[in-house]
Length: 246
Image 1: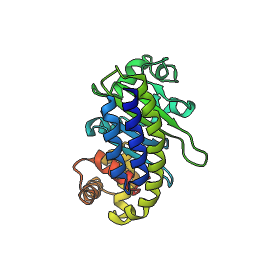
Image 2 (image 1 turned 90 degrees about the vertical axis):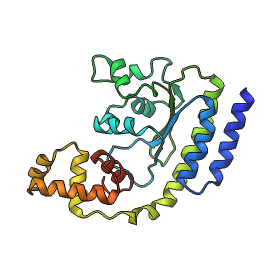
Image 3 (image 1 turned 90 degrees about the horizontal axis):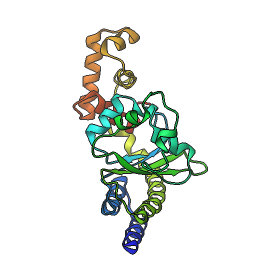
Image 4 (image 1 turned 30 degrees about the vertical axis):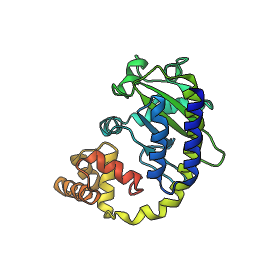
């Protein structure tokens, strides 16, 4: 079985060197990590939510409902997994050594708070911290409900994650120029979405910008239409990932 894990890793490494788009890279990684007992992944740079500076990456296939809950509750600011990954250099298993529950927390019950950032299908995972000189610190998370993962599979995830992040950096730089002109929001639409991302209501945004509440609503609805999304959270996420808001 160890050889099968190694074969999957080698196949992904070879594919990561040849793919031309982030979508193809994501598909290649999914093909390789899912046979190892995981369901979802994220390859991210550890930067402040609402800011995707040049040289940062963000690709993932987390469920949409979980992602929306994570963003709505601003868990990115207190995510223990990201906090630990900034300090660690070796991969860590979410169940081992109490790594997640030894990090600073504002909650009286850190275990309950950690579970609140996960849904039923994402209670177990492995995080591979990525620290490269000259790049933002990053992390690759692979998650799922299965806790009975062979240690050899974890080693395979570690190896693949290093190449995943490297390829993501390369492709993100290549695709960035092509991504920018796809959607054009007006300055007011961007401004209103920026405040939505900060958790402000239409009434609060109207007060901040000294415009009518109805006008704020219309700007946000216009942005949603241009971004082709149905909710405000989706609009914020898509605008953020497209470098339209910071």
